[in-house]
Length: 363
Image 1 (cartoon, one colour):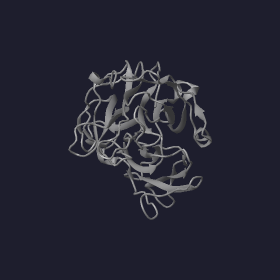
Image 2 (tube, rainbow, N blue to C red; image 1 turned 30 degrees about the horizontal axis):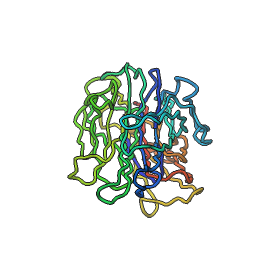
Image 3 (cartoon, rainbow, N blue to C red; image 1 turned 120 degrees about the vertical axis):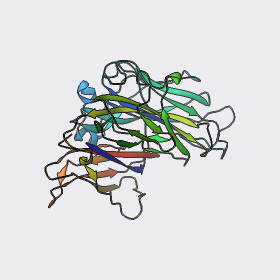
Image 4 (cartoon, one colour; image 1 turned 90 degrees about the horizontal axis):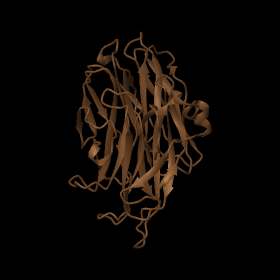
């Protein structure tokens, strides 16, 4: 079983394209204006679309990734293009991505990319679509689409241009059969807005062949409560939206988050999942890392008994993050760790979320 936590750091990135095959593992599209200051009437600010995309690593050499790929910042060929509609037709950007993380055990690669667009309208949508999700218990074997809505009009509360929320997640989240699970969708917003989460819906062309509710989702807290009763892979499609204040019902923007849940039959009780020791940061929880400087911290995971061992601590990281291999804490029968190193660079300008998950030898 696995237990995940998240750490928010200051950085920026996320977009997507058109693909055939059963190798897609989900993605995110976020956006921000180059400047949030209002522009002259009849003009529109340039927009940076940031994307995270995930694929099955073994599908082709284009999606291969290892520690050397991550450390070098090498670019993997992307697939398809980021396109727009419902207000514009000019965007059709091919994209590549820099691999940030991979899992040998789960056979996935994920990475980040970016696209800059000069719009000729203030409200429009961008989307990425493809065909043939992997066979899923709740759909799949059909079209996928992820869609983000952009509004570049000055906000009614402060006159500035909005930026979308930020989210990310592991490409595959494992849950043991019949185990009550509380899953928190990780979200943050650069403008400090109220953020809500909802299931993507087919009527807005947001979710392709994986539309539908998995279980109870608290839209205000972005918490999914689920006790799965069927083994298999389940597609999860959410929309993350920001609002001016808690009473507002009109979203300022809407961004997608899609990934897979894997429900498996474990050989232990629900209480035997690994746990994490708190991540200890010096001083404040928000740390300034000057451009070119390096910050290192440690993540420790603890197994339930000495017959278990941690076989992987997988991450989904911003650019500039590298991790060590899993090692046992000296003198401990239960604790394992990885060291996480972050090197700041000048292209990271917005909030990004860092997720990690531990898996023991019981699955």
